[in-house]
Length: 237
Image (cartoon, rainbow, N blue to C red; front, side):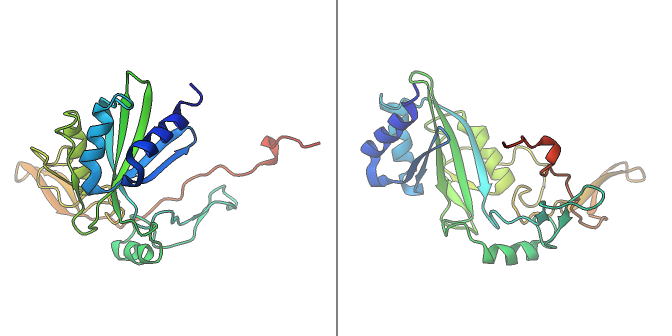
């Protein structure tokens, strides 16, 4: 069983070859990357062929790679009160324009901003597979729907659409599933403000809930982080 992930990698490479943009084994987990136009073809084979038999999709999530890997916290040293210092006044959630400026300097390998990630499970073969597909257009991210292959993908794709704005072409009922009616924007995008766009409260005079512009200033609290401490370092002899 220890060689099962490596065996899966070899089967994938033999079966699909250059159709896969990436196929790798890392930390005991197999990940493939597929072009959008090849997604249905590859997933159909992964579901139906006995060497794979991925009969279930356990999860589908969106990813926003804007400003990927960029952080604003200097966590190597701490202040006298035990907190780290923020070093970049333009981190995710502060200001959309600042995020765009940072993202322009830090592109994620040029593959695009948005991607959908699929977690597949084969019960009969006791193996798992992660698959990723990048949307070719950052302004209107579109990837094929896999609802016709796995009916359980319905709500997963709606969630990724709601939170990231990824459009799953061919979905039978693509609409929001978590946010409120009339919600504007996609809250898991990196350039979406942490304080949101509007605030909601009950107005006793009108007798109903109303929406108003956000009345607080955006701010990001400094997290407490774990650092090196001689008390917890093993002695080297």
